[in-house]
Length: 169
Ligand code: ZN
Image 1: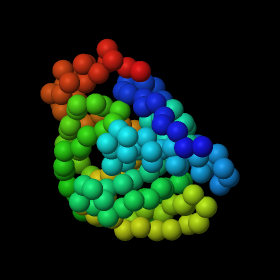
Image 2 (image 1 turned 120 degrees about the horizontal axis):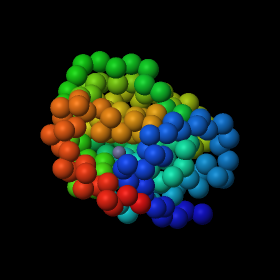
Image 3 (image 1 turned 60 degrees about the horizontal axis):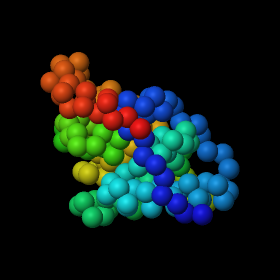
Image 4 (image 1 turned 45 degrees about the vertical axis):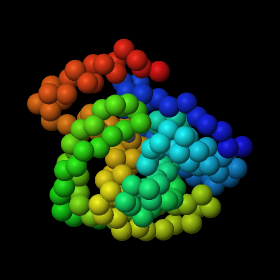
């Protein structure tokens, strides 16, 4: 059953916990994928990782099509198999409401993953698609964009991050 899921916000420790690989492509996996798409749309996000809704599974969903990208798909057990170039853009995150920070990323990446049926596919992504995928794959590894910032940047944005600490769900 598709249902809206509750978002977890930083600094909840689930956001810094590695997600487990998915081995069964059953109804439970399908429900999770569909509920994550519904939750992402409801929250107005372009990407969502399972950690962010309290599930430590290697599942993420992306829909960049309204934000200048081309991807509307789930990625299960995703791996970056190629990365090239470098770019820095401002990113937001549903787990850091109201916070936007510049994060260094690769410019072009190849990602291998499985879809909801277990079929393996590879996607080459650049621009917002590449940023979104790197951001969400980081989540599955227990890494947030806060962890990607240098200590200097963390201190520059300290006020913004401290504001979130009092509101953790
Ligand atoms: Zn995020």
